[in-house]
Length: 364
Image (cartoon, rainbow, N blue to C red; front, side, top):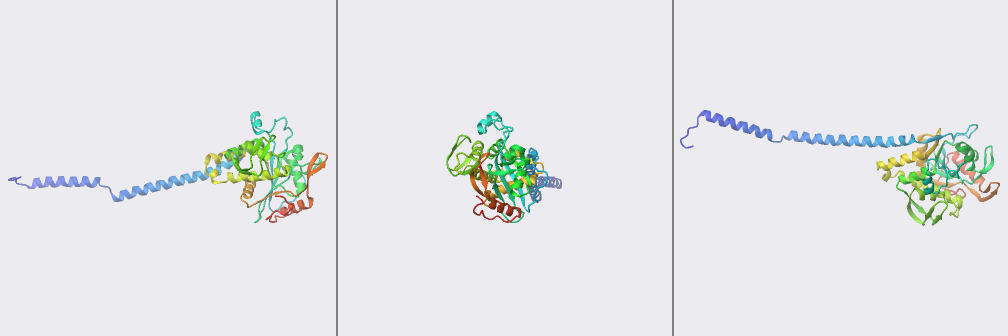
């Protein structure tokens, strides 16, 4: 102000106030170093969360099959006495049985399986030898028609599925070892209810139906062409025989086709990367499976991988060579194998020779 003299005390007060305001402004200003530290902290936190999620996902993927394995039923499927020498590869028996265990009356009607009383003395709807080579050869699914006329140890000649009725998995495996010369390394069985549940857990399975199929006994009326089949329709598709001009042979082909299609979808990203679907498939498969007491999770994994390989065109889908599909026998019309060609096939499997094609007579 005019006429006002500024003394030293006034200067000191102003200077002190300015320094105080400067310190406040500096304290409020963002520190470049602090800002960088915050960014790094957030980045580390994101990485930690991502790592936890990855580890958790991997743990879930590993836990699920072991959890499902705990629900698998076990039976005695290892014959006593002399058995063939072990093959160089791995050979398993995969069976689809008409077991109605666990099915309610309503489910039996839905699946058109007939009543439990009718099914007393259960039989096998499909019998497949699964060969997994130890080397570079292709895995193979070889159907043994259930009406195959073969010697059953202690019971004379009969249809091969009668071995299951007479002595369960143990006698069936013993019969297969005797007629093929193969040492069976494991036994896997799935029943009606288990099969349908597995298909439904995948929201159906895509299959190409070669010809229209209207089969009341199997409970299906399917149009020709590619389509998605749910559990009941899938079960009818693999069980139908009277609507197939090839009868049991045609059914065996459809069974291998559908099993491969199941594994193709089960191991696809649309199943594996969706937790609830992956869990649903694994638990449904575990609940529906029956395995031999000596059959391991690794054995079952080999069987499933072989099925997937067939679906991807990396494996073979065969039927044992047949010479007569209408052989008259004391137990009715049966299937007679082409003995020389069947022996050739099973010797090649026993010696783990690569099966790269399906020569004439070996089936397809």
